[in-house]
Amino acid sequence: MKLAHSCLKTVLLGTVALLPQTPFAQVAPAPRAVLAGTVTKDPGSEPLKKALIELIAESQNNGGNYTALSGADGGFRIENIVPGRYRLFVERTGYQEIDKQHRRSEGRVLTLSAGQELKDLVIRLQTAAVVEGRVTDEDGDPMPEAQVAVLRQTFVLGRSHWEQAGTERTNDLGEYRIAGLAAGNYFVSVSPPPDFRSLIETTGNAPAVEIHSGPPSEKPVPVAYQTTYYPGTRDRGQAAPIQLHAGDSFPVNFSLIPSPSLSIRGSVVNLPPGSSAAIMLQSRDFNLVLNGAEVHKDGSFEIRDVSPGAYTILATLDNVAVPMMARQSLQIAESVEGLRLAPQAGGTIYGHLRMETNANSIPDPSQMFLLLRSSDNDSDGDNDSLSSITMGTSFSNVAHVNGDGSFEWKNVPAGNYAVQISEASTMPDWFLKSVTAGGRDVGDSGFSVSGGTTNLTLVASANGAAAEGLASNQQDEPVADAVVVAVPETRFRNHPDRYRKALTDQSGRFRLRGLPSGDYTLFAWESVDGEAYCNPEFLKSYEGQGKALHVTEGLRVSVQLKTIPAAEDQP
Image (tube, rainbow, N blue to C red; front, side, top):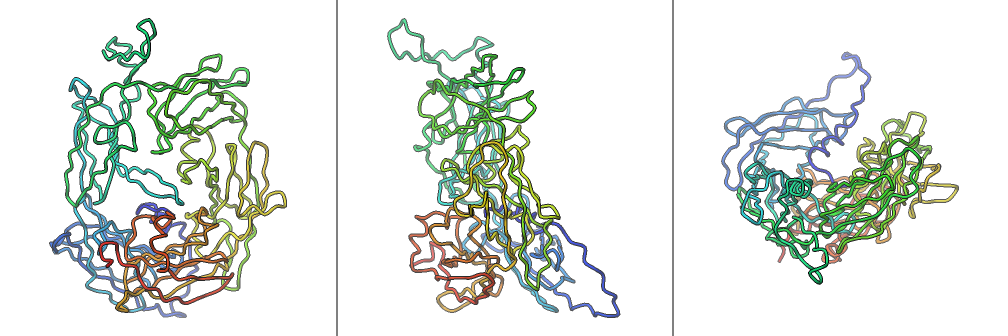
């Protein structure tokens, strides 16, 4: 559900099918459409030159893709547009496209009819913000190669999730600059170079600070530089947000001071003869691999200089006939001793997809992609996280369906999973009707993998329900660029494939497609931050402002929605 501009454009483009050619003499071409407008700076209305305008058809089988550059007066014009529904994106280095609430825009939807000339479209771009500063050690000396990250807190299926809005390593002067940030609230963190501790030990320049936890005869507690959050705390819960406005250049400086170092000590057990193991530690907060460790011949390992936080530790084996791995979730508040990791061979998921069609659809399985999503309770629900924690293995959580309907995932790590149709698929009316494993319906509960082969039978239907209509404000005026979301009933709110989202076009019209049968609540927000609607606490504040909807397979329903004003506009 979460799509950046580049990802969304990739989804829309998909695989362009070659259409059969019709002799010109038999069918006269439909009149084409024209789009014209102006790109301006916000605030104010100063024209902006050299902005790239991209018009991408929602259906690549029926429309085209068009580009233009704004001129010195900010104006642009695109002619000969095939009628249809399009997504419009505007980009320029150092700027962000914004909506009428001055929040970052996801682009806009335009519906263009035959012969239509849509003129006077105004697109506002806002100067992006910058976070810059310097990182030094306790003596004020520059710390090169430290990684500074600008973070936003979002919600993925109701769970708090931290995503990077930008990251940069410091130069030889300890300086960094992170540009291209939209206005909003952010957190800033800095992590020391991964090899900084080993560097100071081998050069004999270890920090002079020693912390004794007992009598003088006891070994001093090791210290190290650790991940630090603005304004200078190692506890993420004590981090203070910064508020960025358009065009801000916000200074954030860090002075890192050595502190007691946490470590993880353990062993990789049951190593096959001749094999070797590698250890990686991934932050579940930031979806980054932060640390590694050498595994000794007896399987023991130690990861030092670990900051408090939530992690996934991953052990993979080399020089084995079949890829083997082990992973475990850790919540680090103090050093960990005696951790045991027992790698095992990944499982294989093999299956067949049956496609139920209707009179207006000719199924092509090869246009379908499937996504394997972790449904473990300790997962943050992010599919990118599932891929990143298995780097170094041959596992991918995306499977392409073959022409005969077969599909396969190999080397699947042990865990609990669910299957959904990937956003990369170019078949918006389809939904996954059933998932069966071993004769048991696992569409709602998911299924487990622990080595061996799991056989799945999937049924996809082209007969998803559709809801379309008009979103208008309290004055009954159509609202363009509103965010319309079909939120599933409570028991399905941790199933991303149950949500549907659309933007209204320039006339306030929207269309939600491929809805599985069930109960939904439809909301229309004039502006909403990311996927805040996945947060149960966010939805509570809008109880009674949505419209209940029950759909069955194949139902086509027209809905009139009242938009929820942006937060600052509400009484």
